[in-house]
Length: 402
Image (cartoon, rainbow, N blue to C red; front, side, top):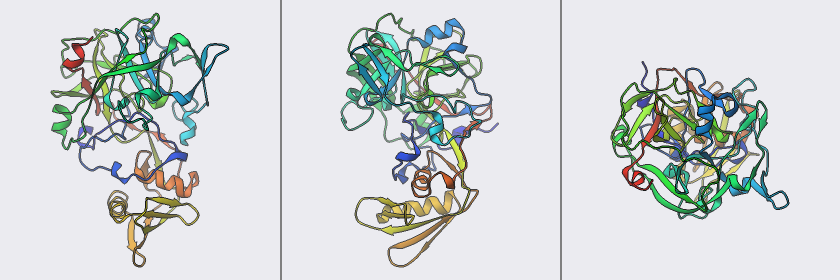
């Protein structure tokens, strides 16, 4: 059995990355198990995710008490109807996804998941809520916490929410997020990624989800999640499909099907249906692409901020970033990187090279060459017996609050 734990494992930012909105950030590339905020999960074996209307009543009841973290700009309040309406309809297909892929026609709206645990409090991941940076999209004052983001039936997403479904965050009561993790041992035994936020008021008609205060973390025990993968409406994983593979002091590893957007979602013991953890880490990205043509990049060293010129396929970057780009292009993609005069370089990445949508280079190529350079993406999948979706144990500091 392949152990995906040996692949670079990274923390999930939860947010989606669109082809029209890439930035240059080569620091997202890792070759050792270093958590980073820009990675996600995958499907293990067959897709285990069910839409709300497909799930049995008992699981729908659990889903009713989960929440989606949605940027305030994504919803518009209608004073006449006293509802919050989706500002702009965006579909998974906007990520240039293969037409035959799962979910391609579904809407996306949120960036993280959470669980209502009573006393106006929501349990989630630390990287889903930013307590102080007002410029961050996850800054708590920029976020709506929303109940009821779901599909009522096939092709029928909820497009508006009543006032008693939409809340703001009054306080970030507890929040931890590790930034200096350099090994798998650190990830399992030292990593911290959790939050407990207080809503502006008590949720109407929402039953708190039960948190197991003395869970049994045994290899082989079944576990599942409910959350908002890719920012889509709530998905309920089949409780019988996933299990625990490795248990550390702070986190444990599973083969739960999940993607960006599932971050912060509750993980349940499949038997008791009580929360035993918070979904926080995973691999790579959501979609794999492949170059349809050779790509030639011009790279010019500059002391100013990084910029891209699509007309000349030129990147203007500092010397340090150029060095990192060289390493990525020659080592990860087996491409070429040669000097073209003082302070100038030419890089070649060959047709057929596979690129994941969370790779920094994917964003650069999309900006410089557009969709014509890439095939349509397919959801990342692994074998059923592989594993790598990481779950944060609910820490005592939170257990003592709920």
